[in-house]
Length: 146
Image (tube, rainbow, N blue to C red):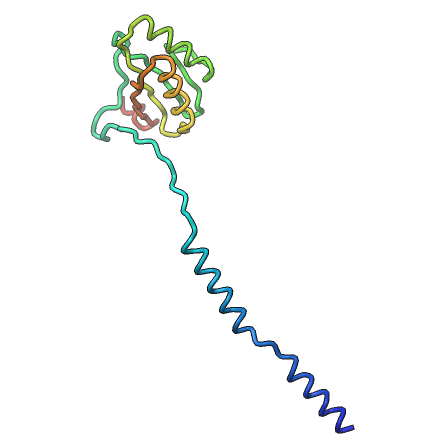
């Protein structure tokens, strides 16, 4: 009987597995993947925004600018009427034909998305053949001051 107990204890001691080499390999692989990983750089749009001390008023209506207003719900207005984002290019092309030197001024609410601005800027570039788009942000606080 004592042999059976002794044999049982020997088999338990032999069943231990040393995990140190496996951990070494895992750490070496982790270091390899961290060093060789390529990090994705986000593309951004450089936008010139006026200072806060400047009044954020749109240009007067008799100006040669094409004024496009975007509210907080991303609804687009040209000449005071709401238009679909898909028809912006055609309307800009029509207004550009009337006054070729006109630039596009986008008066966008601070809660509107950048996707809407980019869609308008792309449409203006396609319609006019050059990039002449200015961004004038506004907020509800600025609207109450006037």
